[in-house]
Length: 80
View 1 (spheres, rainbow, N blue to C red):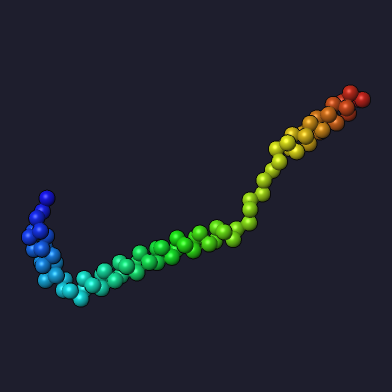
View 2: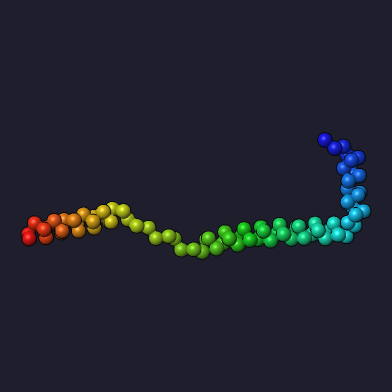
């Protein structure tokens, strides 16, 4: 585990290499990216709220229709 002096030395080298202005610009860009990501997540939630409810099929009605068709076909074959 690095000590606080080692961390301070690494930070000082990074500041010397990149300059404080460039680091603050990078952090600002990073913050804008996070903000944009969060707004995108919120926009997606709002779009979901405006969608109509999905259509559902009543399974009992489908089975009743099939039963009626089978009964009609049996009646036709029996009368022939």
